Image: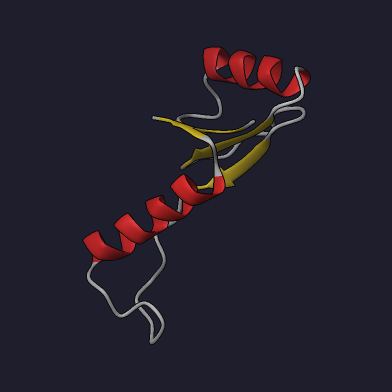
Amino acid sequence: MRICFFGDARNVHLRNVARRLAARGHEVAVVCHKPAEIAGVTVERFRVPEPSLRQPFRWATRWARYLGGFLRRFDCVVL
């Protein structure tokens, strides 16, 4: 199962849960503003894309598309 957490990667409780799920064979990712290394877990920085020719939308639309990408990539998204 592919699981994505949105939260602080430095939080002890989130780190423990993510590490234990990864140890059970799940693909786990943590998305946060301030990344920290977690063994066996992919940590991504939360960044809404800047406006460009490919993303000319307002911030709210870019944000919604960015979050929609996580919903397509993962089976379970935890906020």
